[in-house]
Image 1 (tube, rainbow over the protein chains, first blue to last red):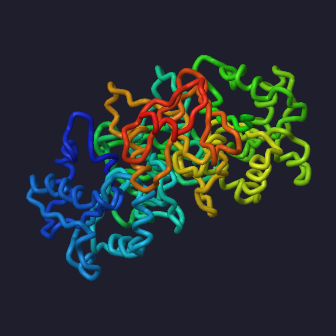
Image 2 (image 1 turned 90 degrees about the vertical axis):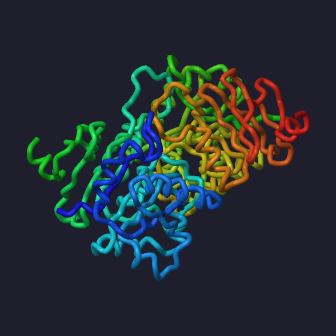
Amino acid sequence: MKKSIFLLSSSSVHGHGFLEYNKPDIEKFLKGVTTPILFVPFAAGKDEWDGYTSKVRAFFTTIGMKVKGIHTVSEEKMFTDHEVIFIGGGNTFRLLNELQQRGLLPRIREAVMSGKMAYMGSSAGTNMATLSIKTTNDMPIIYPAGGFDALNLFPYQINPHYLDADPTSSHMGETRAQRISEFHQENDTPVFGLREGSYILISPDCASTGKMFIGRKAGARVFLKGKPAFEAPTDVEFSLSELEAAR
Amino acid sequence: MKKSIFLLSSSSVHGHGFLEYNKPDIEKFLKGVTTPILFVPFAAGKDEWDGYTSKVRAFFTTIGMKVKGIHTVSEEKMFTDHEVIFIGGGNTFRLLNELQQRGLLPRIREAVMSGKMAYMGSSAGTNMATLSIKTTNDMPIIYPAGGFDALNLFPYQINPHYLDADPTSSHMGETRAQRISEFHQENDTPVFGLREGSYILISPDCASTGKMFIGRKAGARVFLKGKPAFEAPTDVEFSLSELEAAR
């Protein structure tokens, strides 16, 4: 499969600069791309869009690529002049709200699912590629009047920045696994807890094949409703149905 | 002032049983109450409501009080036969959604603001007493179609289970203070970061007087838009405007 959807858990990994940790993975994903990357900074506050775009541009310059902020591109050029859209991290509720207000969700989905554009996301941008934002870690600082549905490029849920429970903690707030089990009290969709540094690669036909590829050794934890959680295979293509059949 | 709204950061504190840590505070708050407490278990999953109510009842039995689950009480008796309503913790989105669906938000607000009922909340139940659920820590597992507005008994925001940043952490997810500063990029309301073990006591006239009382030494961090955060006074009555005037 041509893996055209690339979802990072986070843009930063401890001890590494912005996007640096995943630089080889990003270069590999973007190989052959000649147009500027269409960057979506809407997970940040409005007055940060330009600064955020500059920060992203500074990184991509190091791998010889250009970047345009979607807020500076005309409607008619967004989906014709760019081979790759990259939605960055920040607050998922703010991001979803802005995409809803601008009517961009169906247009992005169509561009990626038809194969016209590749999709790259990190953190909030990774949540946005899934079925819904219901497994974000962010604070609900804005009410998205159009609901919690996201782009549904990846037919499951992802919890980015996934953190294993700290057995030495005295904090009584829910662990990440407990929050995901609350999600499964109300929803049936499988959830991938993607640890910082890891990524998922898929193609638009993932909805029918279920095929995906998880890279980087931090890996991911898989949560299926009503079953014990388990580790996802890394660095090998697999589908949930194959995993289930093999168990 | 007669402090009739009692908001706990959490129902559990490390090393203590359910509600045990705040038992003396709870006993003091409930002094003189003779009717059963009306308990709202809606932050838990539907199949847990009875079990959750039993757990709460077990605690209140130790201080000689009865408990009724709101889901077992007829509509007409909810607000006539109970001097105290207690909304427990769990998932704030699920809680808000259930209260919206049942049309209970205006009825609870009216009962408390008119002085007919006292209000006790912990965790999600504390979020519910504030202006909105926009500073919850919970996962958005359910979309509340009626928006994020809560009961507005307390005219500010509370972030329960408030956690100071851990300088030794290598996790790159946002700290709690960063999340609250994102809230302030989009909203103006002051936020109280209430540490586990602490509580806020107010009366329905807090909206006009601003007077409140924060108990227990873990205390609270106060976040005002565009200003450096500071520690709230504890064990003394104060208002934000007094604090601001004294600085």
